[in-house]
Length: 189
Image 1 (spheres, rainbow, N blue to C red):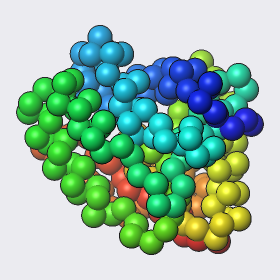
Image 2: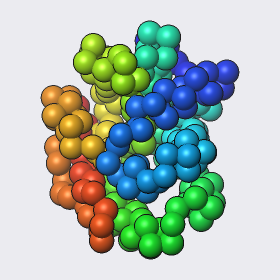
Image 3: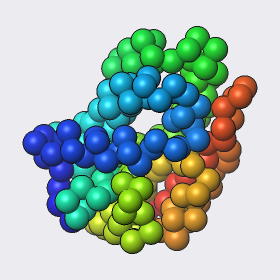
Image 4: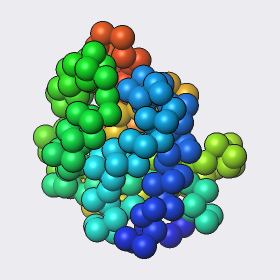
């Protein structure tokens, strides 16, 4: 396990591009493969890229997987996210997406917490325990700080992984034609 520094950003983002290529919500947002490939790296940087500056991004086994965590008090870059959505998301999806983001915000904890915008494993490396190792590593930080952890699962296949690590479902968010998103919280330990 290594901490992802600024020099690791491109490789870490590339792993996330591979990992999210079949994610239901991400591919609902960017159905066209060429638009997805052109847009997702900027989205990932805006959504979780601040982890690189805070030393809270991790990667494993030569970028087989990566996780971008935002420490308490840190948030995604809202302006950059808006810019990515405006230039790359079809209007109908964008309207549903904005409502989806608003609903997700209702579940986001108000108390200081660690936030996991993005975690992914290269599809060729999945099933080898990399996702679990990335989770254990980051959750030890949360436990050290006595802070809760929060995420939104955009893929139902990942929910059991999160539950095994102590996350509980808070509800389900769905708007229009969007796939469901499951906000999840791991209480402070």
